[in-house]
Length: 579
Image (tube, rainbow, N blue to C red; front, side, top):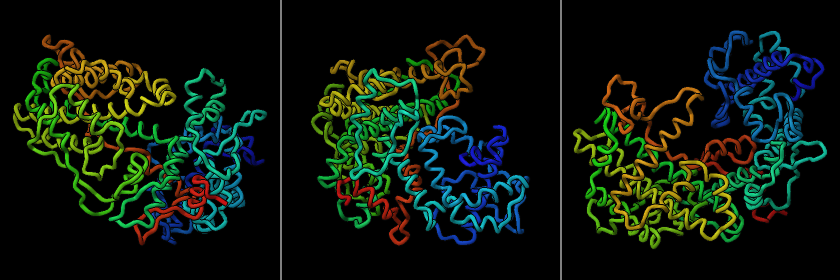
C-alpha cells in the first residue's frame, strides 16, 4: 500500500487500479511463499495464516519456468486479505483510510522496504504483464515471503517494527494527528488501570484513532502476548511431572491484568453454559417436538428429583491426572488464572450417587462461597472449579444425543440443565467476588458490558434478583426461559432487517406453519446450533502473530513453541530484568 501510493509509476493511478495491483502483490507473496517451502521445506507451519495457501500450493503451477497470473486466483469466492483485512489494519492503528497509513503503518512498511524494496519494480512488471517467473519467486525467498520475516537474516528492522506493533508500543502525535511507533522502554508495563479509568470517564475524542490509542485498548494485546510468552518460557525446562508456577515477580507484574483476564475466562464459561442449554433445547425440539410444543410443557418436563441430584453430584466432580502433556494454550490459561499448574492431561468424572448439599439457590450459593468463590485453583487439582464444571456439562451431551424415548429425552435435558445451571451459578459467584473489592474494575465492567444481555454483568444481576430460598427446579426453569429462550428471541428481533438470520429454534407464528395451533408460547424446531466450544482466547492467532514477529519459534525436538532470543528480551523488559 505504501509503495503503490508513493512510487512515481503508480501514485497517480485510480483507486480501482491500485486495488488490482495490490491483489497482484498478494498473489505473488503467496506464490513465492509456497515456492520457498517447495524448494527448501525447512520451516514448520511456514504457510500458516497465509490467505489462499490451498490454491497457491498446487504443485502443477510450478512445472514451467513461469506462472500465468491471468489464470490464477488465490481465492475462488472470498475477498483477498488486502480487502478482507482492512479493519485489522485499523485495529492495529496502521491505517486511517484505504490508502492512508498512519506514522506507525509507514514505519512498518518502510522496515519491510529495506529488504524487499529493490524488488518492487520487478514484482510490478510481473503483475502488469500477467506472468511471474520462478526465478523471481526464488529471489524473493527471504525478502518477500510469508516465512521471510521470521527466518530471514536481514529482516531485523522489519521484525523490530512488527514486534512494537504487536505489543502495542504506540504513541499519539498531536501535531501530526497520527499514531507512531514508540521506542522500546527499559521496562515494559501493562497499565490496564489507565484503560479502565479512560473508559469510565466522560473523556472522548472525536478522532477515533486518537480515542483508541489514548484509551489504551492495545494494552490488552500486550498482556495476552506476554502471558503466552511467559508460559512458553516456563515450559521449556519443565517435565510433565513438575508443577509450573509464577514466581513473585510474575505475580506482581501480571496483577493489573489478572482481573480482566479472569473475567474474560468467566465470560467464556458463562457463554458455554448458556449455549449448552441452547444446543440441548434445539436438539430436544428437533427430536421430540419438531412440530412444536408449548413453553410450559417443555419447562414442566424437567424432572425435579433428577435435576436436584445432578446439581448436587456435579459439585462433587473428581479430577484424575492421565499423564501426557497439557496443551500450551491450556497451560497459559491455567497460569494466568491460578498462577500454577501441573501441565498434565486430566479427566473429570461425576459420581453417580452423592450427598445432597442443597435444594435451593441459597444453599448451593453458600456451598460455592465456602468451596470455590475467590479461590483460583488449577484444574489439575482434585477440587471443583468452574472448568471442571464445564467438563461435567459436556459429559451430559451424549445423553441428549442418545435418548430414544420422550422419558429419556427429558432425563437427558434435566441432567444438562442441572449441570450447566451449577456452572452458571459458580461463574456468577466468582465474578461477584472478583468485583466486590475492586471498585474501578467493577465500574469498568458495568460501563463496558452492562448493556449486553448475555454478559456476565447482566447475568450476575439477574441471578442476584432471585430470592435465595427459591427451589433449584424453579431457578432452572427460569434461567432456561429467561436467559436462553427469551434472550435468543431478543437477539433475533434486534437483528431483523440487518441480513439473513439463522434461527436456532422458533416461537409462535414465526414457524411458518399454516395452523391455528401455534401461539407465542409455542416452541418449534428450526435451524439448530452446534455444540458449544471452549475457545478461551485467540491463542492460535496470537501465537502465529508472535511467530511472524520473531518472538516464538517451534522446537521440533521438544514439540514445543518456545521464545526466541527476541522473545526472551521482551520478557526481561517485562520483568524488569533488562540491562
